[in-house]
Image (cartoon, rainbow, N blue to C red; front, side):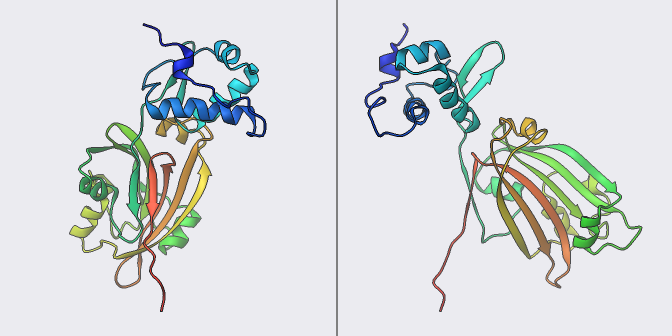
Length: 253
């Protein structure tokens, strides 16, 4: 049985004066229908023409509202098929006060994880890697790049660079990098991390299964041994719709 549009998308107040741009109000109507479950995962959105006629707005207004929800990951367009409600993604909270690996962090939450390798080996270092890691001229750099996946949802792209002194054979890393470093007494004990907002570009958008331009979190981390020596330089890109970084603050004396 087909559910009437009036039941799926109640429009009370949509055309009320002073309520802001029409496309944002229509976006709110669509988002509320998704959040409430009236439109569930995999449901097809009505055609733009039908939505425009029903809401008494232009197709441009409908398209802008739908584009917003696609960018935020609530809707997904399938070429030649239409627009559908995307699979809901559970958000992960990551505390900033604890230095852990992705594998350890997900295991603590009881989540099944896996990785797809993007690169793993010894390479000629970039000038940035040489500076960050204090590498001498002619020294190679160990790199590990992987797509991090939990519950079959790609969450992050991680690219770690290390001195081959600490990781002479990157292929020995099969899951946790920190666990491998611990066997060599080279696990970092502290880190400085910089987090900035960004828009995901290609080809990273394809790897993370998000639209180009979707919100992301770019993270650079420099990790240190107890001696103060840099052991790891990592650049990561996280999906903005799956991760919240949480910091605990205390009142200073």
